[in-house]
Length: 387
Ligand SMILES: C[S@@+](CC[C@H](N)C(=O)[O-])C[C@H]1O[C@@H](n2cnc3c(N)ncnc32)[C@H](O)[C@@H]1O
Image (cartoon, rainbow, N blue to C red; front, top):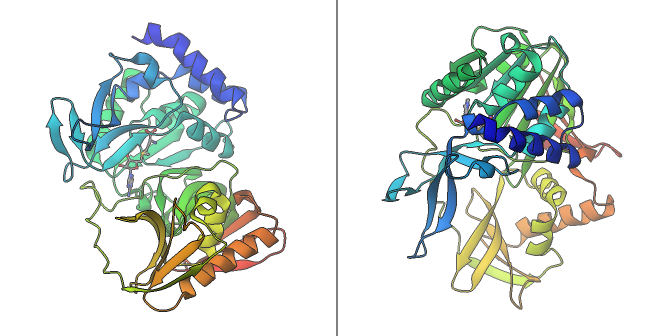
């Protein structure tokens, strides 16, 4: 199959160069060299079955080799606690691992600015594809990768060995880094998200080390590239490359069931300038909302009136705007007055008055006590993030 894949590998590498996700020859070479189908021999595609239920249909590289070389994320594992077999090749369930979108992977690897001889730790081995790209670029002796799911690590180890790569792989909770390493790495790249930058990562980065991770901040989150200062502090910015990852989980058993929060009854409604369309359309606006409204979540809410975007807080208060219909300019709220939405409107006004900054106009700083803040680089406006 690899012979048939060669032109597809070259075409994917060229597509990523054209899209400016790959910007340097060594990464083009790596993408043209590492066969993705070895790491993603099968995956799950979402479809709706004849009863209207969304299911994950299993596909294989043998059936459709070209599909593996498209620039798409491929879901590769479902949480066994939630997965139920629907028919011979379809399951329901919550994804727990995926082969990352190649253009996102390429953009992140470029942002990592590795040089020959750099030692890199990846958090979230998953399929092993990204670890293989790192091996192709740096040599396997300088690559370490961990995943919380031992079965994924075993599968990745076998696939990597198949191509002659033997990086340092370990099944463990990657928020602790690679156990036993102090100041050992020049770069850390996480392909799962964390709410805060773990202390272990900063301890395991050597002087001048760089960390690239997705931080989740409630309403939104994003990729930050941080330089470690060597004393538990790190400073950097949200990258131009945007992408989100599945959250780091504490163990291989999948994600704990979400507690369904009781919502307060409706208190009122009024007109608003901030619409669901604006929130959905502008990723940097959602980031600004996350900075202004800590500990608030953004969810889809559906009832007989239709679907809405809802902000909600742990105290049961909420505010929502419909996605469609005649009332897209009306906010309905519950659990007190419209304070939550007023804060969202203030964030919208701030974002507009600041010239609608993109995500890379925001800095991110992690302090030695584990606290963090973000700031708007042009004028220094800053927001402290909850610990
Ligand atoms: C998007 S996938 C990684 C994709 C992977 N880099 C690749 O090339 O296929 C995210 C991975 O993070 C792993 N993960 C989740 N929580 C983790 C944790 N606490 N420590 C290490 N890995 C974790 C998941 O098991 C999953 O395999």
